[in-house]
Every structure is written in structure tokens, then in C-alpha cells.
Amino acid sequence: MGKATRDQTYFQRSSLFWVTIITVSFGYYTWMVFWPESIPYQSLGPLGPFTRYLLDHHHTLLHNGYWLAWLIHVVETLYAMVLCKLRMLSGTVESLHLILSLARRE
Image 1: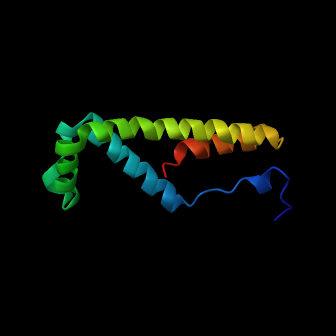
Image 2: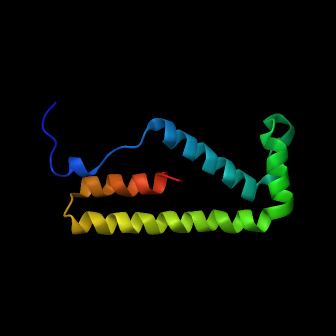
């Protein structure tokens, strides 16, 4: 392996495991909020009744929480871009930070 350039030392990729878990979880959250009538609650094991309970009793909170999560990640992405500019990182690293910030749903 060659030496890492200055830009490469600022970017560390996330584990594929966590990226997958977060993507699937946020996809399920989106499905819950926008298309709850199409969820097969009986086929989801213990997750089905829990999902049904949340939708029946806390739908407004779920909907508002969904948009709050998006807002937080957009702000986080803008912050990452500002940090890249302040540290004078190249466009490639800045783009990687942007994608990672939008992809993460922690």
C-alpha cells in the first residue's frame, strides 16, 4: 500500500454492516409512515404488533420524527461540507463526506 495523502486521512468509511442496518431500518420507517396499510403485520413476528401499536397510538409523532430525522441529516451534511472547506479538503473527499452523511441514519 502506498502512503495516504492528506485528504485520505480525513475520511474513514463506515462498516458495511452498519450501513445496511441503518438503510433497512430507515426504509422500514419510511414504509411505516407513508404506506402503513401495505405492511404485512402478521408476517413480521414480534415486530408486527409493535409496529401496529406505534401506528395506532403515535402516528403523528412517527410522522414528525421522520421529517426531523431528515432535517438533522441535511444539517449534518451541510456541516460536513463546511468542515471540508475549512480544512481545505479536495472535492473527492468532500463528496465522500456528503454521501456518508446523507447515508447514515444514526
